[in-house]
Amino acid sequence: MSAYEQLAANYPDWHVTHASDDPGRWVASHVDVVELVTAATVERLLARMEIAELKRLKARWCREWAVWRSNGGSWMATARMAGVEPTLMCDSPAELEERMRRPGTWGQRSPALGRPL
Image 1 (cartoon, rainbow, N blue to C red):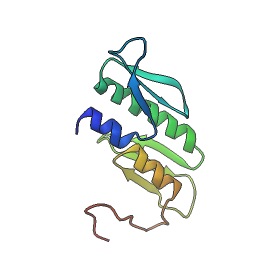
Image 2: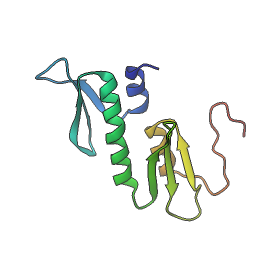
Image 3: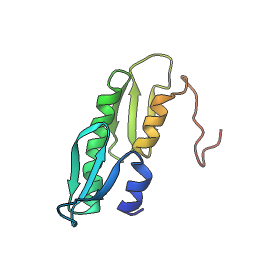
């Protein structure tokens, strides 16, 4: 998947555009992130957005979930509350945030594409 496709698929709440003062520069913004994320290439923008998104998720969910990235690139969260699925593992930050909003109960397997129930 190209960096463009990853931006579109994994960061639906981010606004990505070219900088008005420098058309060769990329800029990304999010309503919950104070600083703009900028880069000279889409690939670098994606890397910087991953860092900004991780910080945003940590700040937003710090009371309910511990959020991190695995060495393999998965988006992870461990519950800080009882009675819910203890650890979430997702391919994108958008998917992880959706699951943190509506976690399953302990022992529940979430249906996923290609995963039998």
